[in-house]
Amino acid sequence: MAKLSDAEIAALVGRFSGEQGEPAKRRADSGAVAAPYADGALSRAYPAPSFEDLPAYKRLEVQLKVGKATGVTQPFFMVHEGCAHATTVVDGRTLLNFSTYDYLGLNGDPRVNAAAVAAMERYGTSASASRLVAGERPVHRELEQALAAHYGTEDALVFVSGYATNVTVIATLFDRGDIIFEDALVHNSIVTGALNSGATRVAVPHNDVEALERLLKERRHRHRRALIVTEGVFSMDGNCARLKELIALKKRYGCFLMVDEAHALGVTGKTGRGSFEREGINPAQVDIWMGTLSKTLCTCGGYIAGAKALVMLLRYTAPAFVYSVGLSPALAAASLKALTLLHEETWRVHKLQENARYALDTARALGLNTGLAEGTSILPILVGSSLKAAFLSNLLMERGVCALPVIHPVVPEGEARLRLFLSAAHEKEHLMSALKTIADCLPVAEEKAAAFSTSRVREAEHGR
Ligand SMILES: Cc1ncc(COP(=O)(O)O)c(C=O)c1O
Image (tube, rainbow, N blue to C red):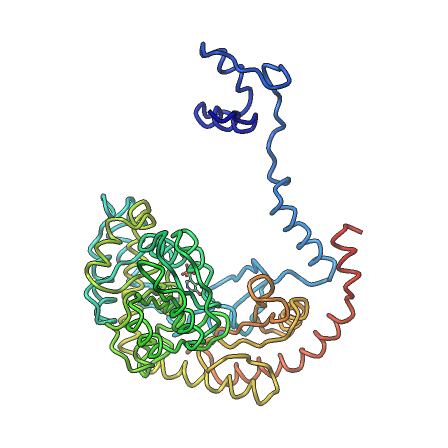
């Protein structure tokens, strides 16, 4: 039998006993034969573990120290004091708001609130159990039927988190021996799901269907099942997937196709139905429609819409569904109301789309770098370094505009940006005013970033 190291013995004994340390002593106490350490000692003192010693903590400390040394005011964890709409209140100041993804301006709508309150009065604030056991309420199925009807699919299933939906669904459906072709810019939740599945992962150059076909030709035949996964509207760049071509490829190469509609529902397509409407395709051609309740539907949670067999399998086996509480009935009711309003009040979709087109044209006319943006609800303003993006966000805050930076490592260094979330709640004056302010502040942010030399970043890293 292979000899275990001290650490392995300690870990094993600790795991079984529920305690760490003194492995040999516990064995002696329990009457088992004592196994002394190699140096002859019968017991060993272990230092108390510390979170501060974790490498990830040390890295975070350095990052925060560097941030502080630059003089940038941390733009994260900002407290908004009310319901964030076209404007928001932070520190008692009213700011123009581009930092929240309430695409159709439905968050706080009295009808959505009333639906949540009615459900809360009837069912309380929690489902109080996994839906598999005692957490099922009528409103869960009503929401799922409405989502299935929206996509024209056989069924749908809602989860308590959009993030967890991607993670659990991909890891439930795919396994070692399978292969997942993921667009290089998909959301972290998709990447994590693919990693957890154990399948072989292939990053496909962003939105490059020709590259995808080359990769499929080379690699598909070596695997049992294959998934192509993408986003309907990309969350960092605001551009759209080439769904028609992906559908052709998935048919040719016998793959499943999954599309994350987090930023497409209520945003693209003539009436805001999402990517299938934008592309004029039959939604049944996509195997797995995924979406979140947190953007257009202004609550919290995720959903899957697709075939009966897919939904049944997930309902009985997806860990984040089976081993997690059911969606709060109040949130299910609010999401259902928001979905109904998306269908009934298409003027919201049209206003958002008009705003998105106007904002993109205006930004370009002002000479701002909008990257891959295509006039959706996400407008990136690419600025270069993370430091420049952070300074720019700070300057905008001072001038009454709330727009947050997206910095390395979320995007590659050199591609840091402001990400503006647009809404039907915005007016054209809001957009013009914010974009002009961005154009005015950009040279100042550039100067500030240039003044902060690399050597000073190094000094900060080393605590000088
Ligand atoms: C494309 C995409 N998918 C999934 C998620 C996770 O959704 P949620 O924040 O609702 O958990 C996000 C989050 O913003 C996202 O952008």
